[in-house]
Image 1 (cartoon, helix red, strand yellow):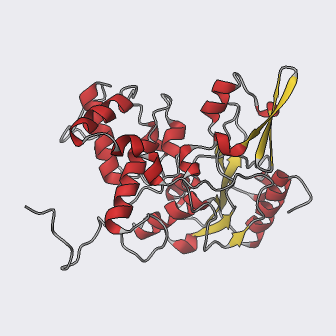
Image 2: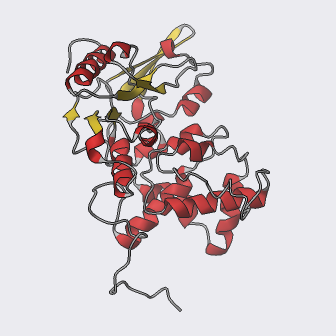
Image 3: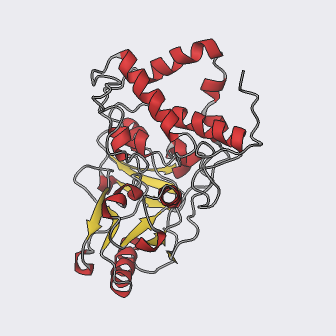
Length: 321
C-alpha cells in the first residue's frame, strides 16, 4: 500500500504513465460540485492531471467515454465493470484494444449515496471518511462508525468480478473495501421470480411508474451507442416522449431486450436515475436469465460470442412451436 494519500498516488501514477506511453488523453474521476458525486474527467496533457480522486462514489462507468475518442490512444482507469464493458465494445467492433491503455484498480465496492443521504441528510464530502471496511461519518456532535457492506449498491453486493483482469498496469488497492457479498443475480430478483407470470407486467409497471423518460439510464450506459435510438426514431415513430404508462413500459422493456447478453451490471443506470428506480431488478433478471439459459456472463472474455449474436445448427429449439 502506498505511504502517500491514495489520490496523490493515483495522480503520480497517471502522470507518469501519460508521459511514458505517449497517450492522447486520460479518463479518470475528479470531485465535482455536487456532494458524494465525483464525475468523469478527460485529461488532455500530463500537466492537467490534478485533483484525481477515487472513492466509493466513483460509480459511473468510464468506458462510456471511449467511443468518443476511438481514433485516439486513451488511458483509462478501470474497475471490474469498466473492463467488462470495454470487452463488449471490442467484441462489437466499437474499439480497438491497442487504442486503450488500461490501468486496473481493485474495486472496493461502490456506495449507495441515496441510502446514505436518507439516513444522514445533507451529508457532505468532508463528513465521510472511508477506512478499511468501515465508513466514519461525522454528524452533529458525534462520529458514527458503520460497515461499508451495509451501504453498497445492489450491483456491487452481487458482483463477483471486482478486480479487472488483462490490464496494462494494475494499481495498489485503495485503503478501503468491503467483503464480497454472497449475493448473486438470483438473490436480486427474488421479488420478480416469486411473482406469477400473469402478474409480472403489473409488477414492472409499478416499479417503473416513477419514470419521467429522461433517458438518463440510456445516456450513461457504456453500451448504448446507437446513433439513432429507437426512442428518437421518427420513421417509424415507435413511441412518444410523453411519460405515460405505455411509453414507459415500451421503452424499458425494449432497452432490456437490447441489453440481454451485453449488460455488465455496472449499476450506472440506477446511479443516474433521478427517480431512484431499482433498475437492478430489471437488468439483474436479464443477466440471471442469460446465465441460466446460456451459461454466459457478459464481458468476461473477448472470444466467446454473445449468445444472442450468433447461432449454430445444433442449438436446442424447444421454444419453437
